[in-house]
Length: 305
Image (cartoon, rainbow, N blue to C red; front, side, top):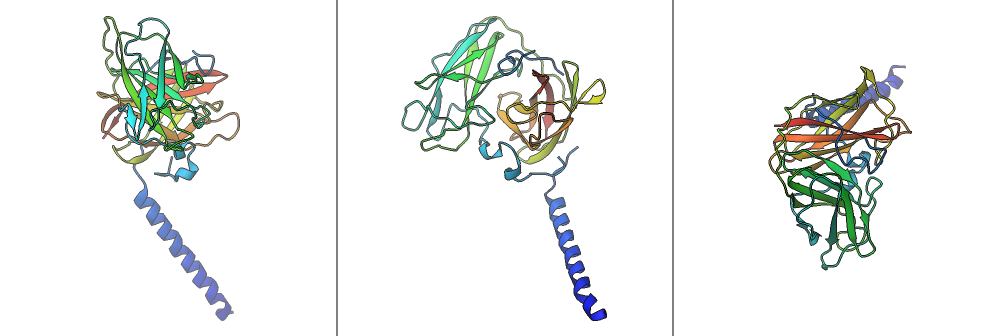
């Protein structure tokens, strides 16, 4: 009996040692974790109105299409965002027309689907107010048309997020941007102070996590209503929530990718994201989620060290 028990004891010892090594590596890699209203332009997709750090990209929806950079250039690797629209009218819905040209100088007309869309288009005022996220339509010649909701006077930056499905950049995610002026007299909106929670349409959104600039950190979002967990989140853009961030001062862009996979028609109350914000300072986060066919957008300020 003693002779036959030795291999079992030895295997158990080796398994325990292996577990200890895995735990040590996981702890070494682990990062620290710890107001708003409905926004205009959110009626284009609906009716209007983690514990582990640096997860594998294979387990993260959309992570295989992460765009590098901060989105502040109108060209990258031969791809260019072009538009004749340098000024837009204030106070009413207005179209913004643009084209993406490739390294050969010709309009790109084939785009891969990313989070159910071939093009994601964003607009943000220089003071980080007036956020819009819409999905424009493309004509046969490669001209895109983005119908922007009412814009306040001031300086705006518009972003095009896309992945070519042909040519030299096939499969590469890009975020390119241009500035546009909305003439008129405008008042700058002060950036709200950093806070853990935001309120929108009767929902309370709580964000936990302490991202560090230039590092991937886990972030969790919990959604409640009347103090009760919300478990009726509907799939929106192939996830239960879409989280975008813009940096105060230069409006640098970041898309915080979800790590919670869609599993059924209803999700929540807790969602996980991979936060990789390139620059320290204040970032304005815009969380979009859908319930009962209605899209909600909550905004909060996050300070990144």
